[in-house]
Amino acid sequence: MTAQQTLAVGPAIAFSKVSLELGRTTILDNVSFDVRAGSIHALVGPNGGGKSSLIKTLLGQMPHQGNLSLHWPGAPDTIGYIPQALEFDRGLPMTVDDFMAAMCQRRPAFLGLSSKVAPAIDAALARVGMLDKRKRRMGALSGGERQRVLLAQGLIPPPRLLVLDEPMSALDEAGIQVFERLLADWRQAGVTVLWIEHDLAAVQRLADRVTGLNRRLLFDAPPAAALTPERLLSLFSTHPRSPEAAPL
Image 1 (cartoon, helix red, strand yellow):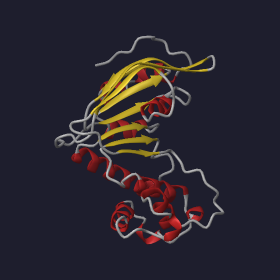
Image 2 (tube, helix red, strand yellow; image 1 turned 45 degrees about the vertical axis):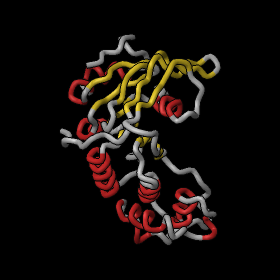
Image 3 (cartoon, one colour; image 1 turned 90 degrees about the horizontal axis):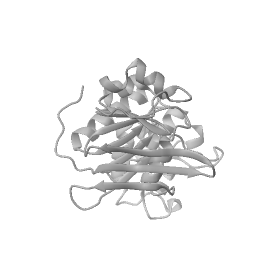
């Protein structure tokens, strides 16, 4: 299923008894699992099951109990994040170049692309098939095209740990092929990828390991062992039948 990977440049991640409550609502309940360095690790589960909250704890955006740690092979390096969708006023006269300038450089976007960053932006847009649409307004792009631009900004600077929140949700067939090529490139480069995804067929085909989350950890295993009918029934039921995870 997976190609032989090179030496990992991304970190291993350890979640240990991570819990999160908002008011009286339990979002995460004592979640523990590990992400291997340089692997493609998928998180699956129902809406409201705590997947996005878990990655927000990793990114330092939500308070939590328990511990999480990153074990880098060298000095801590770049962490990239690609959200599920881009929220913005579609009436704004913001082009693809303007967006990339705002996201990928310190120089104010209204001054245009920095000569230092421009080659990297060119290369990123080319990788996602959006170089010829760089002068288009973001609001005039299709949902799939906007998602490709989000993928492009996640490439600058090159991440060593990449967190993906349902990146395939708005992609068309061509965009899905772009994303799958990027995943292959990240695996080959040894980048650690933590990937929330609802497309279980894609997870089965592309992930190295899968964690099922519905407030609690329900399983943590290779895709062939994780995505069985029995486990998926438990995962997507309102009240999971088994309180214990079954890691393999």
